[in-house]
Amino acid sequence: MSHATADTTAGTGRSVEASRAGSSPAQASPVGVLPAGIAPELTDLLIVGASQSGVQLAASLRALGCTDHITLLGDEAHRPYQRPALSKEFLQGTMDKEKLIFRTAEYWEDHRIALAQDVRITEVERCHDGGGTAVSATGDRIRFRRLALTVGARARRLDVPGVELDGVVYLRNADDALKLKELAGGARDVVVIGGGFIGLEAAASMHAMGKRVTVLEYGQRLIGRAVGEATSEFFLQAHRERGIDVRLEARFTQITGDDGSVTGVQLQDGTVVKADIVLIGIGVVPNTELAESLGLAVDNGIRVDRHALASDGTTVAVGDVANLPNPMPGAPVGERIRLESVNNAVEHAKVAAYALMGRREEYTGTPWFWSNQADLKLQIAGLSLGHDRTLVRRDEEKGRFAVLYYRGEQIIAADCVNNPLDFMAVKSALSNGKNIPAEEASNPSVALKSIIRDV
Amino acid sequence: MPTVHYTDAEGAVREVKATAGDSVMETAVRNGVPGIVAECGGSLSCATCHVFVAEQDLADLAPMEDMEDEMLYGTAVDRQMNSRLSCQLPLREDQTLHVQTPETQV
Image 1 (cartoon, rainbow over the protein chains, first blue to last red):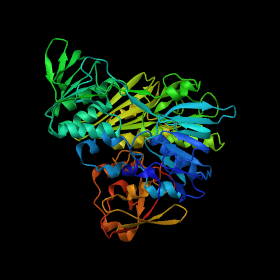
Image 2 (cartoon, rainbow over the protein chains, first blue to last red):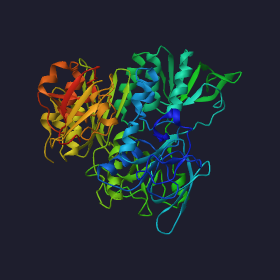
Image 3 (cartoon, helix red, strand yellow):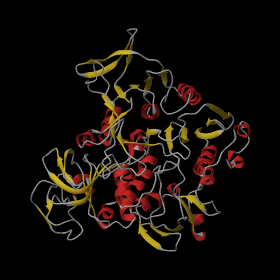
Image 4 (tube, helix red, strand yellow):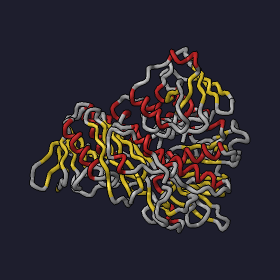
């Protein structure tokens, strides 16, 4: 079959299918420049971004019985893939590339989803009826009735002398990971700039690969945006004990190089931390440019309502790129948040699929997150935003750790390390609108599952 | 070639030819078999790939580790004696498995 979509090796096979995909799939004719299967004349729904949320949106629409013509565009030269393993199993070489691929080629064909890779949309022209035309970087035009933006986020760039040197890398997509893997082969010293999830996951991976790893964190604690102080402290100690040199409140002046290649990072006191690789992981920036050009409301992401609809009332924006009403049951009215997680990408996409089908389901649920760093499995249930007290549960013997977050008397979140029982109990309580009273939870030998109470 | 028979909560059966080395979860997700969510992609973090394994196939599985055992206490549909997380079930060449998916995973 001619669908270039599903195979990286076929990415250059460019041709246009004359008819709309699904009606006569085998009749590809070798004219034009769009990949096979992409109908330029009109698609009912154009999904820009073959990301976790884009893939889920297309799959959910078909699962709901949607028969519209769906086009899913990815801007990378890869079949749609899962990102989480890039900083972990894939980087360490314990997971093969094929394992990252979301769906088989047959899935896309059987579900009549026209999928293309390596197509970057740079402009969208709007018609009065809500439809429009998307224009790619190579000048291809794709007409659509309705638009979904699942364009995600990109790595935040660091502005410091020396960032252009060979060996300075970011880690957001598959190409980044492939490049980092290649560099890692001959590297001994690695400096990671940024002590967040990506930085620490990659640091732990490189440490496991035998590298000497230094983490430079600008802030006073690790993972400062996502967890509370007690959890930050736990990870600081754990990584130091395992042999990673973590430096907090690190200030540096430049990345040093020799003959175009990185040699280290110079700190404010003049000392240089040696590096064959400098990995920068300082967060992401949502890709809001297309939304802005369409005049959609943008504020740290594309603003959407509880149904994933953007300010024009017809475009949906899903996943990392969306600024959405806090979906936690009981969250203060009007509170907004942008969530960078697989769970959000998946659950938000399901709500968007309903919206596109004309059903107004509200996005509510308990966000959850995970991060695996060396032998440390962090699982977070809920959102600690707005908490006013915390409770630490620690079992030294079993290596278990948990921090419970409360707003008043009500539990709103938990960070759990190597502690799936506590994680699952809190996630279950939050999802069912229950509470886990702090007084009872303070005894670490009490199973949280046994003290889930009605509010 | 390994084969997995997936039975959903309504009793509908899907037979899927798998690739040796892939897990029961990966085989389901890649082929669009409903009933297995697998948000964490197989890293044993979410318990949304819960399956009930047919009695006759239970002995033919990789043994359960503590982490999987603990995660199974938090599945959306309560665990039973034959519960497993399908991300922890890699398939061997010529293996045939029969699993039932629960009514819901989240």
